[in-house]
Amino acid sequence: MAMSRRLVLMSLASAAALALAGCAAESSGPGGGGAPATGSAGGSTAAASCTPASLQTHTSGTLTVATDSPAYPPWFADDKPTNGKGYESAVAYAVAEQLGYTNSQVKWVVAPFDSVIAPTPKNYDFDINEVSITAKRAQQVDFSRGYYDVAQAVVALKSDKYSKATTVAGLQGAKLGAQQGTTSLDAITQDIKPGTSPSEFPTNNLAVQALKNGQIDGLVVDLPTGLYLTSAELKGATIVGQLPVHGKPEQFGLVLEKGSSLTSCVSKAVDALRAKGTLAALQKKWLTSAAGAPELK
Image 1 (tube, rainbow, N blue to C red):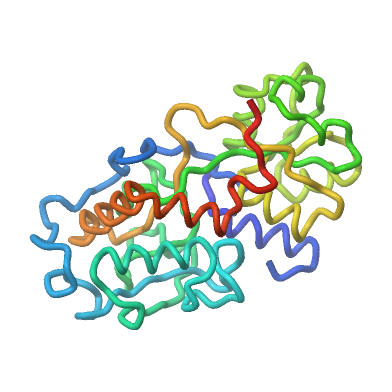
Image 2: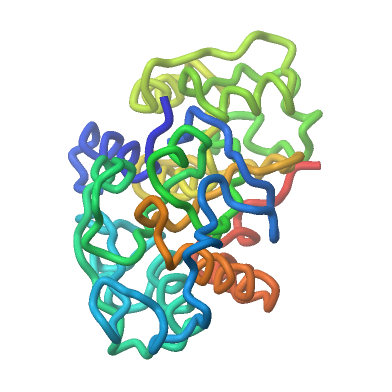
């Protein structure tokens, strides 16, 4: 069952008594770059011109953006989506600017994850909430092009010898674990292919506890979750590195009401930001895709 990383991090944080997204269980539909997003592209109903004057937004002259509450780092900063800090807040404002809206013309509202992916009328123009694009979800909502390509990462305690691995081959002898039914577990079996079968856990909480207890040498999670775990949840842990992304990566997409007339324009804005290198720059700044998380060759 696919789920938002926000929900997984909330679960992890609750277990640790911290008020602070795991891996989606379904693999992504679209590919990277300009590959079409899964679901309606809004082509038949798209506004003729992607400008505030022509876009049929929820409120005329305003771009209403939704996310869940609380809003956690590294996606947001200080639980304030309005400050433009954190990857998703920054992306939302970049999309708005690409469409011709000023920061003062962006309004934020709260939308719980379950309501976002439900086939119900929306009181916002798009939602940004670490939602993985899947074909199943695209039957109920529209997605923009992907604004983040999700990489998997290996997390280990610094005291473990495998924390010093610099290649995928260097993890061959490690006992690795991940949550059941996730792309992280797939990454172990398909990319790392360790000598011993991976440990599967019903929840990420149990997987994290197993790492703490030394039952496994490394835990595979998506990179954003790994960044959170090593900074707030797992004392003395480190990101060993990112696993290479093969084929069509799992992606996060902006969520719109099914059949929205805005979908095409929003996707074009995301495409433009990717082409200009804006998304890459924001990822480097807010998700530290390079610093502290080297790619394992």
